[in-house]
Length: 135
Image (cartoon, rainbow, N blue to C red):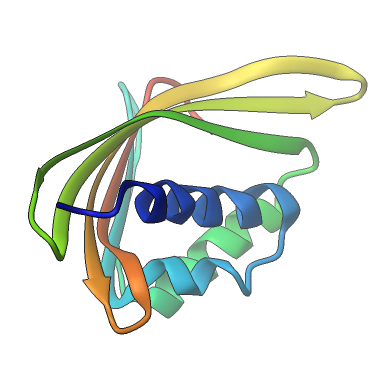
């Protein structure tokens, strides 16, 4: 079975730099050849973005353009199917935003990921984020 606490930490390590802008953390959550895609319901699709550095560059440049404070609330982490070293993992995103003293839920969505155990620990080999609204 996959290590649930390590996979939960993997999602925390993914969300943290999006909110704190500490992008040195973000590279460690993806494998070198990972893929990352964002699909907005009824709208645009970004990606697939291929490769760890390309993903970090995309995320950091996107966040740099945002003037608000974001909080990625990642819940309902569900693991399966799984082996010792590979797991399909889904989770729910609630994206909370504060700007000009106002708090709003900006979007919500579903992460569909594949996590693999590597020499560096658990990492995402692929991530599809299906958003209900734009980000």
